[in-house]
Image: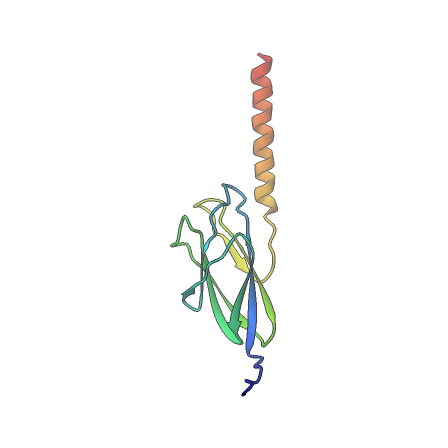
Length: 127
């Protein structure tokens, strides 16, 4: 009986796919790591890769031409966090990076839009 020695040449990419700010959020983006398509879901995804440099490419399912790319270096037995957020619309770009980004400006505009609609509804009911 032979036992293969354990190699520490594997690492992981933790791809966090944020739920879209606008829209239903049912569709996970299109993801490739080093040119190989990887199935992902909205939320956390652990992708096992070999140690070394890897190219992560992500695009929204509804617009596969709008690809974001990121080069990540994975060390043996390390987990590299990568965060992706779909673009809010066709006029904006999505975000892909190793740090989580907040979209406070877009959330403020959404809240402002809801307040405007509520005030218009209240004014319509008063008349």
